[in-house]
Structure formats: C-alpha cells, structure tokens
Length: 224
Image (cartoon, rainbow, N blue to C red; front, side, top):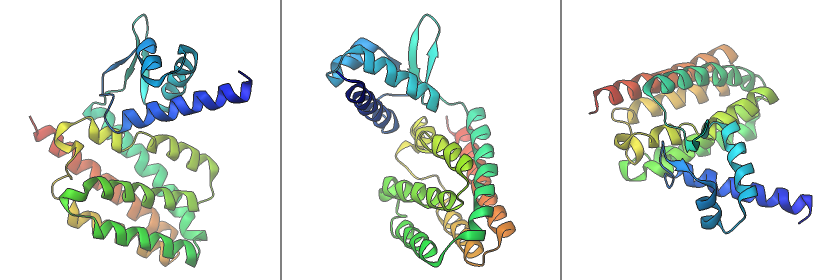
C-alpha cells in the first residue's frame, strides 16, 4: 500500500469512528479496543491506531495509560468551561465577521435561520441542531481569521452534539425553555451582523452562548 492510499484509509477510518462517537454508537466512557474496531471496520489495526491518535488530538477520546482509549465523558464542569471558551472565541469571530460580511453571506445566514425556525418542534430536534451548527460555523468562517476558524472547528467536532449526547435527558430532546429565547438570541446576532456593528455582534453572540450554558447546566443539575 502506498503512502497516499494508507493516508486515505486512515482518514476514512477516522471519519467513521468520529461519526460513530457523535451519533452515540460509541457511548461516553466506552473503551475502544483496536482489535474489535479493526474487525468492525474491516481493516488492519494500524489505521485504527492512527485514527485513534487523531481523535485524541480532537478531544473526542482519551488515552488512559496501561488501559487503552475510551470515549470522552464530560462532567458539568467540563460543559461550563467549554461553553465559556466558546462564548469568548465565537464572540471574537462575530466581531470580525460583522466588519466584512457580504449581502450574499447574510442572505445565506438568514436562510439557515429560517430553516431553524421551521424545525423548532421537539420532534425535529436533531435537524434543528444540525442547522444550528451550520448557523454558528457560517458566522465564524466569515471572519476570515484562520486561527479562530481552526480552533472553533475543532471544538465543534464534538460540541455541542457530543456534550448533549452525554446526558440521556438531552440526547434526543430539546432543552426545556430554550425554544423562544434561542430564536430571539439568533435574531439579535443576525441584526448586529446586518448592521455591521462589531461590538453588538460580539456581545449578542456571547450572550446567546452563555445563556445556553446557564440553562443547560441548571437543567442537568436538577435532573436525577
């Protein structure tokens, strides 16, 4: 096998494992054994080992000395830290995006926003989360600040889908009391971007993410 083919196989294996983690096939805290994974995926153990290392770097799994690799299991403290980091970074990205966003980019963002509003019923929660991810990634990508984009893409590889899936109460159900405020907060972000107001866009983004954090953490602490 040449180096290009080997690299492609490793990427395919990593993509399949990443998807399996994010959709809950591999559960938080579950041990990932190379031999079993190789059998499941129909490959040798080498690309599996390399894929595991890649997912460690992404923060989806962790290596435990002398025991192996397992899917990351997040605590409420982890969620608090991640939301606060994301609020700062996405706030900065929104600041820069407000300065450069084009009419075409704004129209695309509004289409995503409309799709979210059309899919805000509880039974459409997975579609809503997919569109929400697209909404946020569209905004920080517009910033053209490559370090922010790389960092946020890495965070969004596991966030918030994997965080939410860690807890049975929120895995397949929307967060209570977020529907109406979520819509208002997204609109505030779009309004600030449309006005090309960097400070307002930054604040609106931070307020939105931190509001979600407060409600999610409060709900999880109250859930047995």
